[in-house]
Image: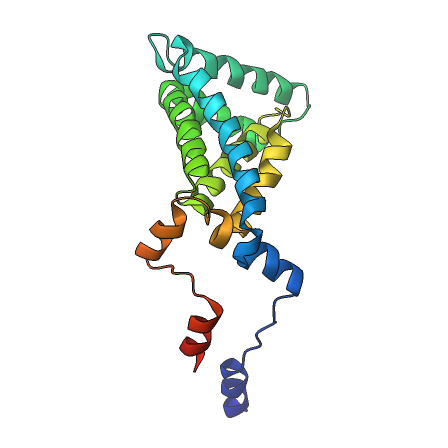
Amino acid sequence: MKKSSVQLQEKHVIVPENPVSRFLLSDTRAAWIWLVIRLYVGYEWILAGWHKITADTWVGAKSGVALESFVKGSLTKAESGKDVSWWYATFLQDVVLTHSKLFAYMVAYGEVLVGLGLILGLLTGIAAFFGGMMNASYLFAGTLSSNPLLFVLTTWLVLAWKIAGWYGLDRWALRYLGTPWHSKSSSASINQ
């Protein structure tokens, strides 16, 4: 019996990727699609972050005031049982509100950094992941606006990380960081 369980552990199944997802997520011919999405989402993040960086109530003399107002609005929604879960309201109350200045800086500069990463196509998957985290945070806080759309688009960019930055700095940066792209001929020679 022990021998058969070892044999089962050694076997694994590799499910081949379907042609559509292979094209959209791994083929550089689809990189232009991700370029358009990347530039749109990056622009939205830079614009949102720039408004915060240039506002006194986010990172200026009155830093944290705007974030406190946002959090208090979310807490009001939670108290009335609308749009904000109790566990997220607890996080907002106990963590974000008590460190509002720190979170205000993190949000403002985080939005700009995500936008720059996406526009430049530098560490696109990572930038999109953190953008998606911020969108999810805003959604949990009861804010819709463009957040659902941006969350979906950033999730797709994370899935397409291998080619989403092809028309950007990832084309060279990922090669340097140890994630090289291979043409069909070099892939074939590697597999032999």
